[in-house]
Amino acid sequence: MIERTPGVTRLIDRMERKGWVARKRCTEDRRRVWCMITGEGLALLEPLDDPVDDLDDFLLDTFSETELIQLVDYLDRIRALANQ
Image (tube, rainbow, N blue to C red; front, side, top):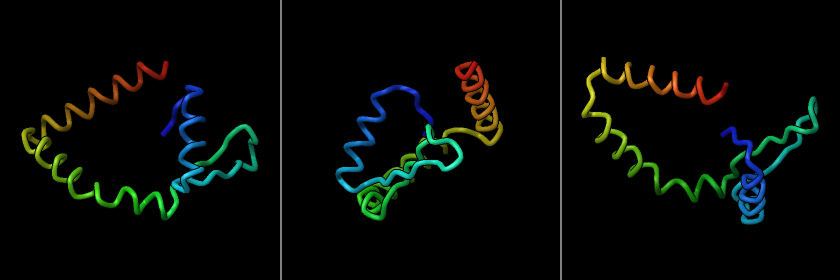
């Protein structure tokens, strides 16, 4: 996840206090901090895996392969514009 808003720091602080993520400062650039999910964080998310996969399958089954390729292209173009 790449996010530049200051609220993310507070969110990561709370997640770290709960043991869901760990932080590690980058050795090449001390301004950069790597955030990694912990085993406890993965365990918290595990019950969501099947329902999320099922919903993805349900939603994506409505598109043909050509339409999915177009959708990915559109989303890539939107992301490129947002990063300008």
